Amino acid sequence: MNAVQEVPVGLADRSAILDVLRGFAIFGIFINNIYAFTGYGFYNQAAKEALPTYVPDAILNFLQTTLVEGKFYSLFSLLFGIGFSIILLRNEQKGLNALKIFYRRLVVLMLFGAAHLFLLWEGDILLLYALVGLLLPLFRKCTDKTLLFWAVALIVSPLFIDIFKVIFNFKVGSFIELAAQNIDKHTGVPTDDSFAYYLFKDGSGWPEWRNWQQSAFLYRYAYLIESNRVPKILGMFLLGFYAGRKMIYSNLEQNSSLLKKIRRWGFIIGIPSSVIYACLKTIPNELHLLDTLFYAISVVPLSLAYASAICLFWAKTKGNNKWTALAPLGRMALTNYLMQTILSIVIFYGVGLGFGGYIGPTIFFPIVCIIYLLQILYSHWWFQYYNYGPLEWIWRQMTYGKRLKLTKSSTV
Image (cartoon, rainbow, N blue to C red):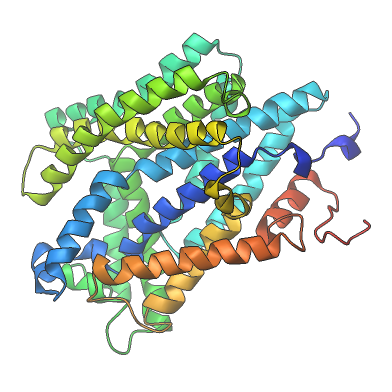
């Protein structure tokens, strides 16, 4: 096969609704991530109650748990699966080695994720996506029915995994946590509740940030393993692969009946289950299996309801609506995702302005909204002059091994 034929999806072939959904997902992911960037996600209850904004913080936190937590990484996972179907189907139609292109793309994503994880922030999701994505081609020959079976089985599997862990009193990520704690003993990162303020205390700077990073990625992956994130992500990948294979995103009007059912039942099941899950998190309890159950039956339905509602509105308005403002943001989702990390470190960590620590959602949610609005404006400005986001351009260059036009005026 001629390598010069291997090109990314053309600009004219991009699906605007998928870019809109990516732009929407980036907002929810940022709301989730800001809890770690500000340290609030590590506070104990006493620390939260000590904040002057405790009451509005509690309300906003409840709303975040109900409407945001888990829903947007699930949506992004769904979109990843759709993206895999696009790469596979379009390149196979051109007679190209689709798997070769897909795996090269994943390797580059791994490099971005590893750099993000080890050099900037432990909360990276890119590396995990790339690693789990390696399994996707195993399902490419499955029938639609088999694909849906595996998607549902993987999504609900955490409940059975947690039952097994409760019966045998087994914590999967414990050995990784132990390794992290041993590192902390040498670096001086506290292991008691004061660790929540380590990056934000007076005098905290570069040494504290690097000390934190030496063990933080281990805590992160212990949490990801313990919370059964791998089967959840793979299940959503497969669901996205199914949706992409059926070309639902490009035939919204023809699939409006299906989308309406998903929207209706997604909200009917997802909202009450999310409220119950949020209530469980506000009270001390040992009913971890209930947490797992209501998380499982709330996150995916509500995530799909969000996506379906946007798609139906998009189809009704023929794409002529305010949601189009998010498309440029979604076209450079990788750049914006990493930009959120850099801006948050600069604003909140002691190595930067040190604005984090001792603040709650009442303070940091508006900051998230401001940054997000600025990213929308920046993304619109960028695409007036360039064909790809900066990191997206590098990603494609490394994937396809050829020079692609970055600037609109370029003649290359």
